[in-house]
Amino acid sequence: MKGETPMNPTETWREIAADHSGEIVLAADFDVAGRPEARFADLAPLLAPRHTVWVTDPWAVADAPGDRADSYVKRWVDEVDASGRPVRAVLGFCGGAVYAAAIADELERRHGRSPRILLFDPERPTALGMYFQFCKALDQLAPALGPAEIGRAQEAAQYEQVLAADLTDYATALLRIFLERGREAFDRLDLSEAHRAEFTGAVRIFLAFMAAAEQVDHGPAWRRATAISSSTPTSGLNGHRLLNPGQAAGLVGTEVRCQVPHVDLLRSATTADLVSGLL
Image (cartoon, rainbow, N blue to C red; front, side, top):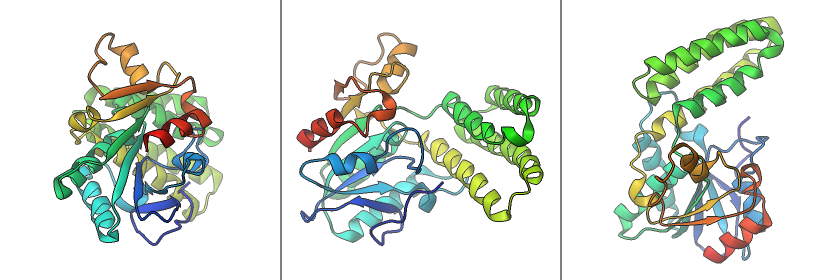
């Protein structure tokens, strides 16, 4: 479930495109091969001219719920600084837009200037979003557990959402429930230890990555960013407007709306043309 082998030797980034300008474009995302949503790896080849693009590797920085977001950011930016390459822009997709803000702020703190910030359907991670992703992971265990057991796990997750003090608390509870149900499913399916570790590791890293984002003060960076919104009413700023009528103004510096669904936002020629112009 992890992304492809990196083109560059960095530990916390994967290089998904390269040019010869010397500059790099950084992209923050929970990047997983095979997901339905398009990835920065889909967008990068469509940009004209080409840019060197590095995307965050969550597996290199995240460990478990309770991680510190500033630890992630430090490792990412330390490695960028060690490369000696100037940063042309920082991009962020969905919940990764929060980390894009943190990376841009840290670059500005160290070097006195902020790179351009482009956000694609930016969202703050929420307990509800975590629950939906938890349910998707549970669905993959359905052949072994069955509807009744899946339903009990979902009910337990909903109950823990009421009790949780913050996203770290909730992520910790979701991971415990998943490991309990997963152990039963893996035994019934007779999965190898390697496959068990890969599956549970992906869930653990995702929950850690999303929970830590709650610690980031993304507001100042978002207010100087350009947001590119899809046509999907429940995604990004559209979703915020749906749940909070009249409260989206001022969340970002500039918003550009594209008639492209959320799942295709990073593979659309329309998006690529827009980003190429902005870069």
